[in-house]
Length: 468
Ligand SMILES: Cc1ncc(COP(=O)(O)O)c(C=O)c1O
Image (cartoon, rainbow, N blue to C red):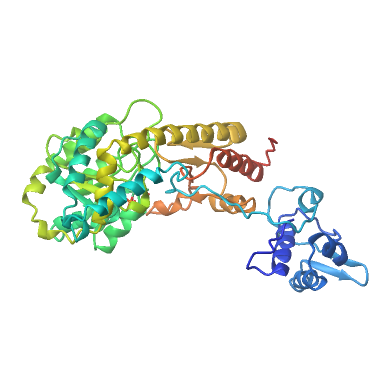
């Protein structure tokens, strides 16, 4: 047991919470005598009052009972949590007053690797951007975005994603949600029904609903993928898809389906919003061609972002409009540019000097290694108790654990200071029977944390102990 003397949380509360958790998880069995107040005072180097307060709280809440002059004993609890037991001796001694880091291993989706961020180069470019004192950088800037950045993006899209477009088709936006808002200004009120992947990206779903769109669920599943027939039945003229790495399931839309999707748009005078959010990171096989790259009928509105490939805090993403739309759209439709012109110019410099490509190459290797450790650790510690999904691209994968309640698994992981998340929130139509996958984002974790996190979870979920 560790207490943090610098913590804002009162010491008695830390001691109380520690015992409460150990009792609830069954690590301290019923009828166990707790260490005496004097014993704990000596080992934790805190006052008798502090220990007494913690014990009184446990007493008041019925976790322990006191026996006259003999000390405190744990009582029988009817519903202690069904968690793996570890021996009281191992978990509770040595009691120590030393400071321990409350380190949480957080498999949060959306985090990226910051330890290799090229901060020096980036700072230099930001300063250079400001030093120029150009009006278009220091004032509001072009509504469509800083033109030289749009030129760099069009070059990048051509060699990286097979997209041939002019900078005039590109609109810089401050994030993907903002991009969708801008796109809706071109469609509303004429087109209000939008075909939305289910499960799908909640960021876009929220924007669509807030803007008053009627969402038609297109139920994507692992076995059948994206059901084009459902799209045809939806009578929508606008669809949102993530074909290169379905969010959150991670599947890749096969070429035959991509062609069907494009045909649907062409035959129905419809548009497709293709969100290509993490296509820079593909680990097996060759890169997946974008839908926009295949689009000969000018039906795809492409959404790209620098949040995964560079930095979420830059808040720079972009839209590639179909040629026809780009020509006909009056720029007055767009709001004032929301992405900072200074950051846009710095990003332009970063790309133009080849630093973005270098950064991408490095990050691909780093994420590839992290992904390998994650996959190997899951196989090694969890084996066939779990099924992995979508591990071939991006910065997250899913775990399916049959017969287990996802919320309970997430709660159990918390006990060993690991945060994992259910994918439930990405399903608009809830299916109460199903057990939702668990989503593991690995971008922000070190290789050591990934391995340790999976090992500890295997322990707490399946009682598998492989000591390293
Ligand atoms: C499906 C999807 N699209 C786009 C994004 C990027 O959003 P933004 O450009 O607002 O950072 C994310 C980020 O998490 C995402 O999951």
